[in-house]
Each structure stands twice: as structure tokens, then as C-alpha cells.
Amino acid sequence: MKLILGITGASGSIYAKRIIEIVKQYPQLVENLAIVFTDTAIKVWQHEIDDLKIENIPFEIFKNDNYFVPFASGSANYDAMVVCPCSMGTMAKIANSIADNLLTRAADVMLKESRNLIIVPRETPVNLIHISNMKKLVLAGAKICPASPSFYSKPTSIQQVVDTVVQKIFQLLKVDLKFFEWMKFS
Image (cartoon, rainbow, N blue to C red; front, side, top):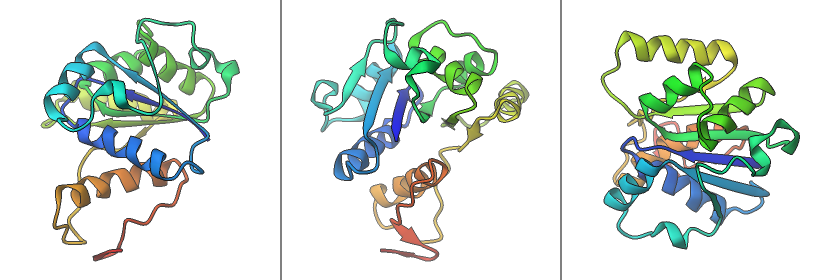
């Protein structure tokens, strides 16, 4: 699978970090991971993630103002895109087809090509405009996967809580990772 990971300035960099760790740990899952940070995402990442500098991420990171990258076009045949965490501002741009940077252009390409686009909003509470934008995205073919962890498995660490969301993201990508099963961690 060729996957794009878009990271925005919403709090929740830990979710994106965990996706990157899993792709690194299981290279057979994703043949190509392309990463795009918004400017605000870089600042939030630096604030929230102390143990991993962006420069040390083992995958190619593309500048958000560079439209001359393969996945800015549908002919590049990327299979899926995950926007995680997704700010309400970025979600609004994607829902209204405002492709004013690489991240929103790539999401627009996913929608126009009927490819898998997963939006992971991390805001709470939401207002009617947010819900309207989510509805537009679902009607356009995207999947909304709120960063709402589950607690059925009685997680005992932050990583286990994060993994309840990340596992759901990978399920939506049709990748079956079993960090936990109903009521227990493996």
C-alpha cells in the first residue's frame, strides 16, 4: 500500500507518531509512506513529542507548499491517506475542496479518485459547522474516525489507549493489526 500521512496542528501528535512507529515496525504493511506536516503541526509536534525529532523520522517528509510531488496528482496512484490528527480548519478546507496546500490537495485527490481518505479529528466539543463538514466528507467518500479511544480492554498505559484509536485507523485501511481483542490486550 502507498500511504500518505497528513499531520495538522490539532493536539494529538502521539497518534501520528504511533502510526509512523507501526509502519516502521511492520514494513510489509506499507511500501511507501509519504508524510506532510502543516506549519502548525510541526510546532505542536515539537511541543507534544519530546523523544522524536521530525528530522529523525525514517520516511520522506514533503513540504506543505510543494505541489510538485507525486501524490499531488491522481496519476501517482497512492492507495490511501490518513489525516491524523486533523484540525477543524483543515477538515473544513478538505470538505469544501480548498486545496491551498499540499495536504489539502492530496486529500482532494483522494476524494476525486475515490480512494481511501481517513480523517481523524481530535477536537472536542464540536459545533454544527464541524458536523456539517464531517457530513460533507462522508458523502464525498471519506471516513471519519474521531480520536476517541476505547476502554473495553482496560488499558494500563498511554500507548495502549492510543493504540485503540490507531488500530481502528489501520482497520479502516484494511490492515488487520490486533493490539487488543475485545476486553483484553494481546
